[in-house]
Length: 316
Image 1 (cartoon, rainbow, N blue to C red):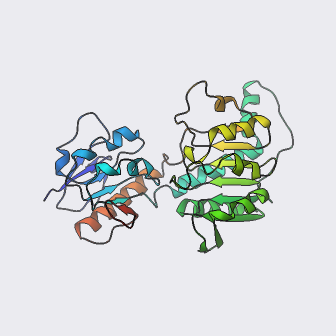
Image 2: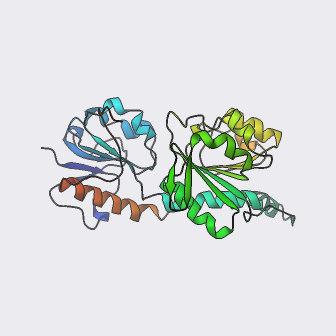
Image 3: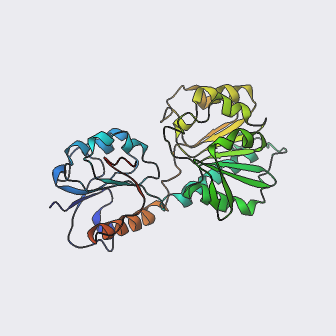
């Protein structure tokens, strides 16, 4: 039975990897570290293009676990036909909540308080004082209330927001209050001053933020996207931004990377960060902990964490 583990973090940087496995380092380079057919566990390289991540999959005939280091696994699901049946695909729940929630709050505060304008004024040596909205007393709607959505709410609470509404694919109870189903969005959007997107990209959420969604947002509302670019219809968003009716803060875009000359760069009222919700100093220690725990579970034949699907299963 194969025992190779492909890691995108050098094995020497881990402290307690379990015995009995052969650890190989591969971070998406042209040369594979070994025969993909001998790979039992594939930890997917982080911050690489989809074509790099999926390149060895067709040859990984004996892989028994695929572990991503991202919260979203849409790029791997798109290549699911390359993976043999019976392989669990696990995401990185527990790795990105802190840093992504920090960025969601940063983008929200920076947009409301006009930080981009202050930076431009500083470059001109211009004292640009004025009245700006505060986050305090605002109504916030979180669309996508998983681990990241909950972490965002944890960080919103000290800012004295008036209300937090929570929406997920299906309704349920949470420690902070009810989570409403996506079908309630038409009723919630007109009341929200800030709409934060933290939903995974699925067939249901692709294009969720379309012209109808945006039209229901109140005048002057802020849209913050730390989810995936294709959750938002870029053309529809541009129309609202150019009309000056709403503003937006985007860590992800569609297309991505956003090419030079794209009208979104110069649209009024938009703040863009280059998909940096995850890559911070918080990433490596949490990623190493998750990978180490998963490998221990794998060796000991214990239930794995964060299983999104098992390939070939009719229950997916």
